[in-house]
Image 1 (cartoon, rainbow, N blue to C red):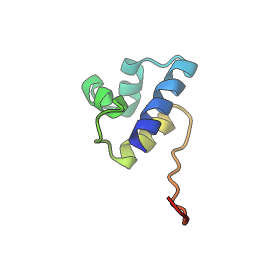
Image 2: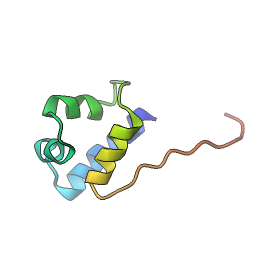
Image 3: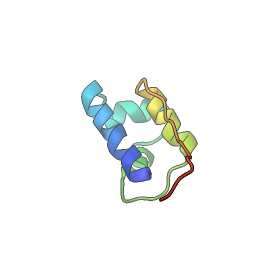
Length: 70
């Protein structure tokens, strides 16, 4: 889930032409912290932080839990 979210945030940043520095400022965090959040191979990243990043890009983060076979 984190990998998909990180890739989507990076895609949105490219589409909206938002740099990492600009997004870090919007989130009131450091560039290093944002780099960790956007690293698809780094499993850390709270849902609340991912949600704030999505919001800063004009989107919402939706997590869905569904019943069914894996």
